[in-house]
Image 1 (cartoon, helix red, strand yellow):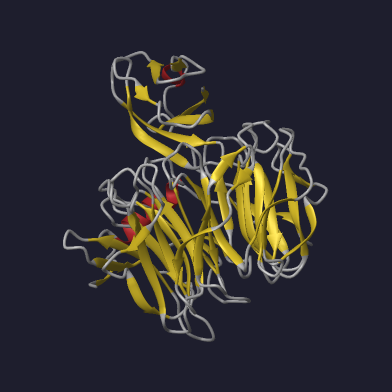
Image 2 (spheres, one colour; image 1 turned 30 degrees about the vertical axis):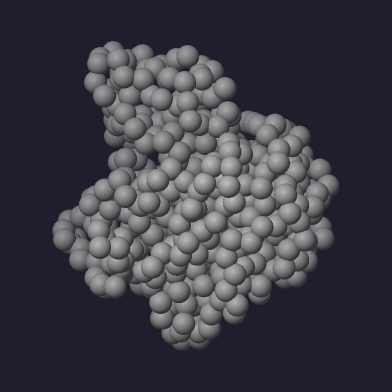
Length: 469
């Protein structure tokens, strides 16, 4: 595996350009006394009011905390979704039962179970419903790995060294566990899923801790057979090995070449410096490692979203160390073709962040950040203060999309016949489509699941909500 240190080609001029367009507010407290050791945060619109709520789990305390977005930059803590679950290391917001309401799915490490809580559509959640008893669930993803049109649940079992999946049977029911991967003493920590090899089925990237200094990152390919057993085969080339304490991984097109790359943090530990890497799969099958240079010695979580509305997704990472002297939250502007700016500091006053969520928290069409502080037991958010580019409002007022609801093709009404670069996001804020649209060239949305989506016209920073049926 080749190793490359990312070179900053344009120096200080480029940094000045990036920070001039997008800055973040100082931290704005949401809750200064969360339950002990908040570990994971996720965000989604849970009550259908256009503003995303926040869901937080803790490591040592019991409970799942829900914060309602009031729409004015403030949040109100609601009655706890659960008061019994502890060591919730796995959290997903997902429409489990297909009623177009986002539910909460949680995996308890010491409780050895995976459960879900049904949303009534107004942000009220029912009692715990068991999906499965499972040994030490630490990371999970919903994805249609058997290509039957329903999103299945894939889970890493830390102490068992296993990756298992539960087939989605519909209506909130799942099959029993089916083992995909089993490697004793591998201690798998994090998983992401995407069609990595462009063969129309979903592949996996998994981090394995093993022991200090022996961590690995592996890709597994889906051997999809119609109506057959779901199996996976490990890539003959390991993405990376010898990592000290590999913490997080994410599939992403880092260099904008329409091929998927892999982001990874090696958090380090006990005085050992960690790193933020991305990996490109070369045509010969090997992986090239590039380092994104950061002053953070123990990078933990990774975000990959367009923070400055230039149509390119940027990289965000956080500091997993407690009481560190380095920054706590930073971002790197995507300059295209795999080149990124030097780090831009978001916060220096939020200690030990193991998770953050990027979403438009104030409904002003740019991406904000909410983060939990593990050792300070608090929850804060950072407003994206990107300045307006001053585009002609008369042009924006002529935009519209139709039909809405839509089944197959979405059209745009606009004052001219140009092609517009657009991005489509689901109600979890996940980018599901990047394409172009014009009055004579509709956007094909037939492959999207039924539900609510946001389409964003990148050049004009204009967004519309539409319903896929």
